[in-house]
Image (cartoon, rainbow, N blue to C red):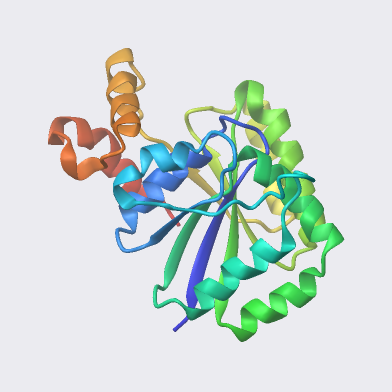
Length: 228
């Protein structure tokens, strides 16, 4: 059985990694949820009802990714019986990921994953407006560090819409590097009431099954459209 892992990454905090993790968790009810965020742990809060497995990826002394923990995670997945894993790496761990790939044997790791029938996909969240530059800088670091050896998907968070110029830059970048670009958003209607209802659901950590259909409607169509 092939195993698939989504690593949701972005070095810029608040870009929407945990939001995307929530949407994927609702779309794939049988997926195993991994919380690799060593800082805020938004995923642990928002997906409390799914009992996410917390994996401390950073060495407490060096603040860099612990290679032993990294390999142990994949070893555990290789032995487990679940086909799909969703992992929110958080800002601090995401920031270290390109450096980890550069300093360690990326090809050796990939060979082990292939031998274990594990498909790793990096989903890099980007946003427009005032977070565009920071999120695109991180995306570029990730692309450079992996050298095309690991599949990268670019996920644009519609909660941070791009200007026309930013949209053109983003489109040009993904075309030049042959990267899939998928949009995600929670609601086209971003009035105060809608945003308040969405925030309440995320903070409660009980998922959509526990809320009124008049509130879950903000999520359901967006999750259906999510092309991941």
